[in-house]
Length: 293
Image (cartoon, rainbow, N blue to C red; front, side, top):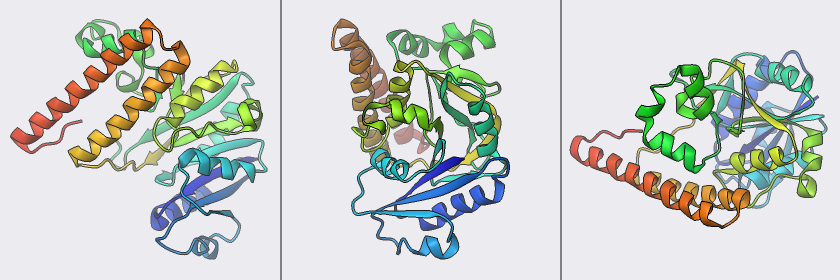
């Protein structure tokens, strides 16, 4: 059985649509839905039970963040596999069953993520490599990578260099659809997800820790979900999120490599590149009124 864990925070309509799609399309595996309401004030959390009386509802007294909310759901889970599913996703096929069958047949795989698209069908880059000095330099001088055959370039860099067209091993996968065996959770410290990050970057951290246990991380291309993932159009908000991600990426690098020379060179390169990118976006926005990615 798969325990599907969804976090709600003031998004009743969005979350309800997600839950509805899980019940409508999950056919080939038994499952339960566990909804953790992170102290929402938008409506009474019991409203979910009126539409979905079969789900497990957990009411958190505080909004402790994405990781802590998922840990509450995991503590109440009965399944042999856990799926962390974002509330802003929609299933259009039996994605849970397909991912479960892929994962259950591979004892050395600790996490599976799946193909994700925006509502307009554009691909989201959910299969990733860890940031390294080499990756940052190849990304900065990306014209060099386009001299390589696509297969080599995509496997070397993943992310935006990969068309999400084949199942492959990755360093980490996006946490919007994050399936793992319960046995992996039991092997983690405290038998729960690391909750040091309130939000953003947790999926990178978890995959690093799961890889350290000897498991592999896989991107599964044979099923697709819709991930709404609405991005703010405000540059100020984007800068705030970028600052959070920079802190988290540097913290993960310190965990992976220690705070030696490599760490400081990486942070210098990564931070400089990210702020240069932001300044270019700001300049384009000021000149044309267009917000570029």
